[in-house]
Length: 134
Image (cartoon, rainbow, N blue to C red):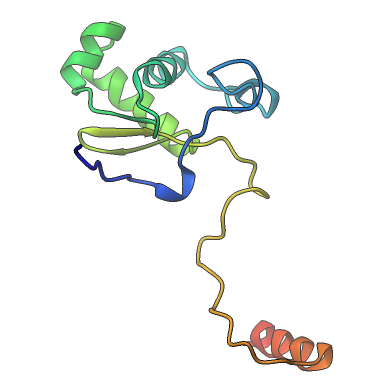
């Protein structure tokens, strides 16, 4: 079995709990608000053809043919979806990303490893204050 690289492993798409393959948060959390019809068509297509990890390998030429988009329109739609955090793209690989609110998103950098050291609340607060002042 071929192992495919994930452009954005932290945002691996999972099938939502509700009864629909397209995550209802797309509408409920207003991810589609303000999106162009070309971007929405591309997103729906990618959701439809993606594998269990949200990955698909369609060329720009084939996507343009299937969606009736010019090269410029396809590039604009892809850019719009990437800017909205709905897809990741590393030519020719698309990844449909999980839908998360900013508060649910994983941290940009992992927390420091635990040392097992026991510290008082006062020590922790002093350390936090020192980091905040730097």
